[in-house]
Image 1: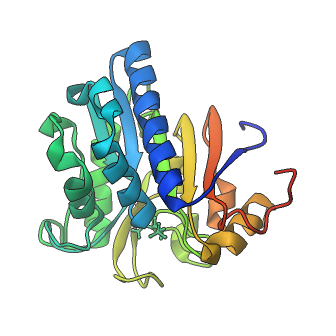
Image 2: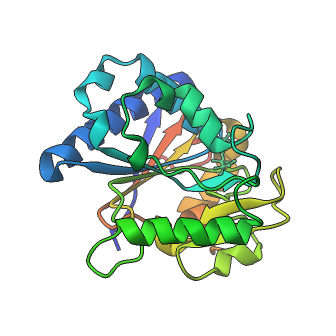
Length: 250
Ligand code: 6PG
C-alpha cells in the first residue's frame, strides 16, 4: 500500500504529454543513477503515444542512457507483428525507432503471426518476465508503469466486468475486448502492481467520470483503474478536462 495517490492536473493534453515526458526522463535517469538501469512499462492508446512523441522532441532525451533501459508493454492488441494498430508499432514510430536501444532489452508481446492464441502469447510473455525478475519474483520491479485509462475505467486490457480481471499469474490472454481489436494480451493486476511508480495518464472530458469513480473507490469490477497502486507511488497525471469531476481537495 502506498497511501493516498498523488493527483497532478495540467492545463491541457499537450502540456500533460510534455510534463509527463519530462517526468519519465527524470524517473529513468534516477533509476539508472540508483541501480545502473531502468525498467519501464509502456501503455497503448493516444496518451501513451503523445508522451513518447514529446520525449522524442525533448532535450531530456539525451539525459538517458538508452542502452540501459528495458522496455515492457502493459498490454498488446493481438495482431500480426508490424500491424499499425499494435501498441508496439505505435511506440516504435513515436519514439523507440529514434533511440539507441539494446534490442535484447525491448520486450514486445508476441503477435498473432508469432503465437497461436492470446493465451500462448501471454504465456511466452510471462516466461520473459520471470526470466528478467530476480529474487524469486515472477515479474521485475518495474521503475515506472504507465497506464492510459479508458472512458469505462479500463487499464491495459483489463476491462470492467471482464473475466480477465480475476486472472492470476502475471499475464492473461483476453477475448471479446469491448475496445477493438477483440483479442489482446495484458499484464494482470498482480504484475502491474509490481511497479515502483504507477502512473495513470488521462486526458479528455470523456474520461472525467472514470477518473472520478476510480479515485472515489469504486470496486475493481466497475473501475479497474482504481484498484491497483505502485509499491512506492501512485500518480494520476491528468489534464483539466479529465479532472473536471474531482472534488477540489483532490
Ligand atoms: C490499448 C490500451 C488501453 C489504452 C486506454 C486509453 O491497447 O488500447 O493500452 O488501455 O491505454 O484505452 O487510451 P487513450 O489514451 O487512447 O484514451
